[in-house]
Length: 111
Length: 111
Image (tube, rainbow over all chains, first blue to last red; front, side, top):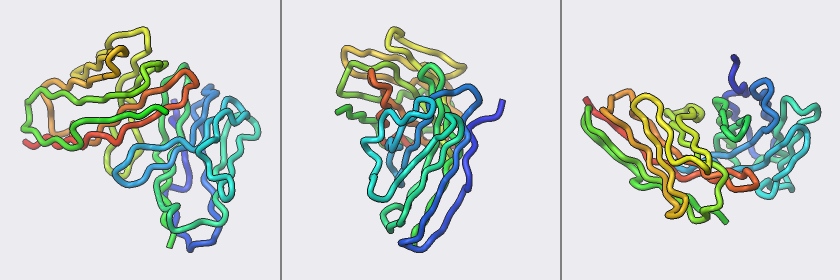
């Protein structure tokens, strides 16, 4: 069974540029999470989806971040414009009955 | 707001030792608690999931316990091996399924 797939694995951009991350969850997992992880910290939840509905996005900086999961399967997280402080690893996870499974993450560097 | 603390922050042990990693949480109204390991530059790998109605879970050399009344979970690793070297994270999920992570325990097992 394929795990959670994320792309790209690495991204380097200049500040003020846009960037997008893509996630394909494990087949059959209705719940999808996006996290941000800074060095030496645990992941922090940005947004959680149940099917195509965003049920918790209180930690998502909505002035520059947006996310979508149009058909309740794969999801895209976008940052526009990116700031230096957005440099981090962006992790996607999916779950079934509460157990989360993570993808490899996208390491974003903003110069 | 749920807060999760992991102690110790770092641990270095000789191969073969049994060890205990601690995870404490402030809000005992959790749905489940999950333990992960994270290797450098990688995503999180699920180790054990304990539902709120359970007291412990075991997988191979790993045993995780949960005491909701005291707000604590422990991960016991028996007969540690160099391959166990990684960062171990716990995540407590509340009734709204929002996971809160600790900052992790960085474990080094030296031969």
